[in-house]
Length: 268
Image (tube, rainbow, N blue to C red; front, side):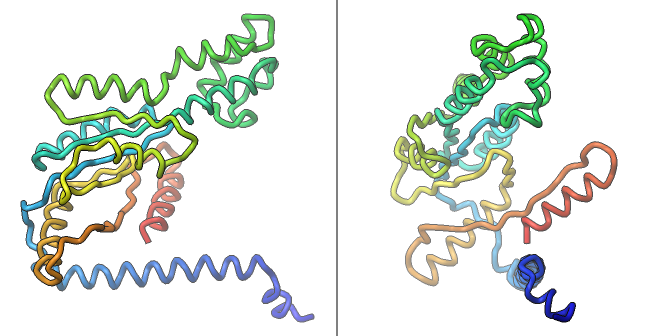
């Protein structure tokens, strides 16, 4: 069999060809979208006629991201009257922590490493090793629970604190805690079920690291207005495009380049 024929029969070759083809197609779609925007952007003049928007942010093990997201979306809501913000947490985080504690029970200190115990961060592993060394070299479930609970509150606990502070300032911010077995979609559905929203209000679902700007919603209002004029009805669903950005990360510089390449790939 020739080398070329062997290559064409290789699954790895076709996987790579499919990946390259997908990225080329994405690049072409992006090029055509930018060309369309260049032609139509004057027709999409900003409009302040959007109905109230109810932001829902499902979160899981994202303690460090709650406060900056809270600040961003609360500032955004200042430009969107009658809008609300709801963080949707889940008991799945507690169950995952309980499973991790069970896995750590009886583990020798030398085996507690983030690379060998899924779900552990490097700092958590160091604290757990210290605790195990201080109690005979083997970690107990109670000690693991004490360390993990003391040094990292659950996301739901962080949300509770942040929501309490925001509501003291009169902001329409809420916390919906989902106790079922579902995942992200179930969290969103649970939060939606608890909303008090009018028929024409919009529900906007974002990740905790999303940073939409007011110009996006002004353009969206113009889009809604155009669709109503053309179709006679208000669009019930609007799918927004996303652009992924990466701030500078630690040296070496290739890490930043790699991360930006991954972000560009997701954007395509």
